[in-house]
Length: 302
Image 1 (cartoon, helix red, strand yellow):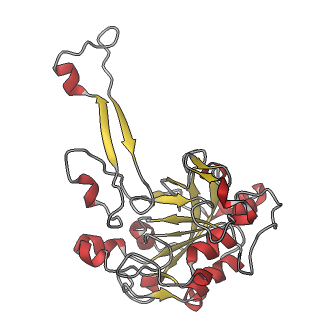
Image 2: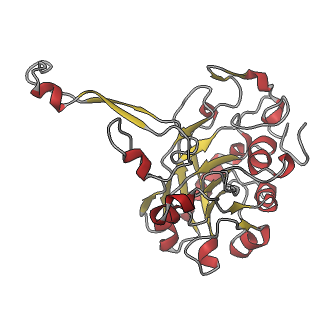
């Protein structure tokens, strides 16, 4: 049973996009005014995949999640071994990439990714999430996201390189930094990816993140998405699980109840160093029909 308050029915009984509906042409045009210098920063972690090296393990990820795999179906070695060129000496390399994105790389969660009871966001039946994908609220409904991004650089506000593992960001601290407008993407920096460079065991020993009240505060301000550099937007304990009950779980508050898409595992160090609170946020997930999420490369246009 859904907890109140929520956005169920707000955008119509068939809605599958949630607060992305707030990104009207007028809102998008206003968001574009946030670009001043035209500098473009990537906010994505690299995807390193291989079948014969430790490359995937060198990028922050949650323990136990399937890591990216990168295969070459044809490469330079094949031609060296005698494979005939295509046509008049033409050679080509083809590859395939397998990515289980949740917990392993920069990605966006679809509204079908998490729920409680027997209903997805907006009351869609959870039984519509099948073995071949979700027939309701899949990632293909997102389209392109162009919005004003608002950076909440919490550790910088507190004079820290990164937040402690057990830190849960209160709403009042977000409010000290900025107040988002309807349709904005709230981008929250914890600095936690820096810990990976120091110690993988420390990275896995817990993660800082938003508190339940902070998530509810952002939802009440009609953000179109919440993006964070940690693995779950909310905090994680030493078992890589959230400690909150269902009523206070960040995924349920934002995805399930308010239809706010989540973007996780961003790289925000250059953006934080730029000292800009406002910018243009651009992202587009792969159009995976029925996908519970998708790898993305978010961009910040300064």
